[in-house]
Amino acid sequence: MLDTTLGIATLVVACAVFLVLGLAYAWRRRRQSVEDYTVSRNHAPTNVGIATLVASMFGTWVLMSPGESGANFGIISLVGYALGMAGIPVMFMFVGPRIRQLMPNGHSITEYVKHRFGLAPFVAIAVAIIFVIGIFITAEMVAITNAVSVLTGSPKWATAVAVGLVVMAYTAYGGLRVSIYTDRIQFWILIPVLLLLLIVAAVFVGNAGAWKAASEAGALSVSNSGSYFFAIVLIIGIVASNAFHPGMWQRVYTVESQRALNRSLWGAAALAIPITFLMGMAGIAAVGNESVAPFGYPEVAVALFALASDVFPLWMHFLMLICALMLAMSTLDTMMNGLASNIAADMAGMSIGRGTLMWVARIATIVLAVPAIIVATKANSVLYVFLVADLIGAAIAVPMLVGLYSSRMPGWGVLVAGGVGIVIGALYYPKPDLLSPWALTAPDWANSQMLWAFASALIISSAISLVIILIRRMAAPSQEYDFAALNADVGLIDEPSPADD
Image 1 (tube, rainbow, N blue to C red):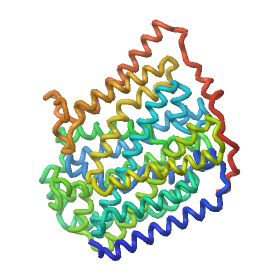
Image 2: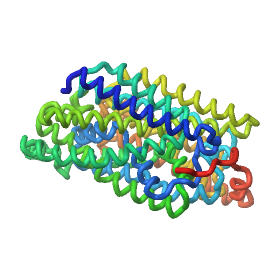
Image 3: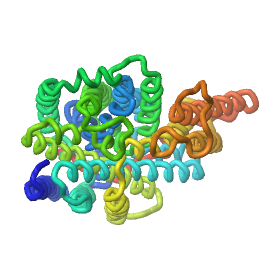
Image 4: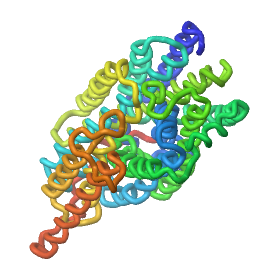
């Protein structure tokens, strides 16, 4: 463990550096338009697109959640985790170009839902997005407070307040442009530092004999059915829940062209697999080193850091602290600005002035962050917090996104399919031990409570959507949505400023 004074000093310096960088950049662009603040349309080339996508996708949770999964469920679950993270950009390879084609002047997924499905689905999806991203923000705050606490012994509230206030300040003032600016800096520092950490960690862990012990304990087994089941849960949950991530939808419009979008997404997918998998291997090494035990909470929730305390030298603890802080800020600013910009874009059609919209977005950023700061001082498991959001995504994603392709999916169909999926999945959803159910027990042959909950939510909502579309095709063949209306109805909020970076 690092000295607490050194840890707090590092926390203060890192936060101060990014506060100054963010506010300085935002000040230079203080006269930006609402368009720049919310989507910064068509200005990012491929290299910037890759950097901001990766920095936005990976937060401090990557130092914890994959390790927790690996420690509990073994190596196959890490394959699922890695494929799930790569599945996020792969999903946007399909829906991203489609929404740019149908709604070229769009800003957010809720804007699409409002114009495509109507007011009731818009309200329902908006609430779901606020809930999901609120959970994401909370999970990220939980991750960084736990990480700093384990590495330095500093109180969780100090980390939550410092990181939360800094990110709130530069994000609320500067919007998406400043988020992308800090993402670029964080990306080019984080990738080489994470690579160095992984190489050195592999040497130290190998010398400690952890891999051999982990293999003997079955953590490297490819015949553990529970590991396969949980891998499927992760793939479903991660991909589906990120369909609601406003920061990802912002970046669909931020890149300069369809070609740049596809290249950026391919780059992000290629990096997502090794980053997630290798970070998760730390959990398996922690089990082999006996730093943690499978399902041994709360220690297993911070498996990498438990391993670090036993095996790594102090200079690696320092690098881990820097990584954790940068990962947290890169992800938190994306989610805070994404959700705040969503709210501002949705209010743009209410004859509200530019200045008022900017203040609405800034105030929303602050309001969203405060509860997460408070909760982060109490919670322990990042994985369980994420899985709650993932279940909602699994139930609603297909009904919502099918409307991009089927002209016969009605707004009430989204409500019915998504609502039934959530209810069924929630009834089978397990308690924080990830094993015992809240209400209904999965069939014996299913052999996985979590998989049954997620599969039920996804399959039932998808099946209901398909049935509704087929019935409407047969019963009311003339009732189709005109996709051209999305282009006609959705326009720019104001004139964007010339790109200068």
